[in-house]
Length: 293
Image (cartoon, rainbow, N blue to C red):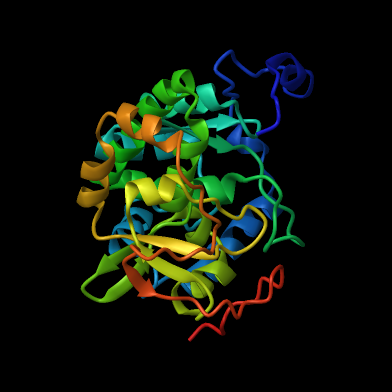
């Protein structure tokens, strides 16, 4: 992440607080911006049923996110009653330590802008649709809500151990781009997938990417793509298993990770539990997924 300075942010956002939050000022969103949200919501609901996990879809239903950009005060009241989390507005990306501090205290930072109506499929920086539609429904699931708090606390510790790159890979391959096994088959829960119409189809149905059983050390040694669809997705057996595997002291693992290999994003290892070995047929940067059924 590029260096971020609060003094620079204050020049553009004078009301920014020391914790990098800002007033949402929900009434300032225009009718056109609310319509952009509704358009994005309708597009995603055209592909997510039968692809997203039940826990994500249940969170959407509980939090009633269909009607436009949510008022964070109302959204936080609803979410806090379910799992104790709240949503806070930020002007954009925040420093790692600020992000971890918010998560550790059950606050999810969300961007306070929405993409342009002519750029529905691509944004350079996460907007309110990605942050709220993509992330917040899973925060209504008690086990995942606990996992996110634990991740924030772990991030604060990892900063002092020089292990942020390893922890970032865990976040990427679970919170952002995770898949889960269910009796009905693989399902999506990662926010980067469930907020992207094309990747929602690609992640589950394309023959191109690997789908690999989750292993904590393997994930922390694996690079990821920030500019394209993922070459590998890691699949958890359950949210309870994810929480149990990661709610531990990572000190010994961080020491181990100082030595040994770092794996490329699409690499397959002899010890991997392969649910699907990709054929690498996807053309990079085409953002073309198989047609949605």
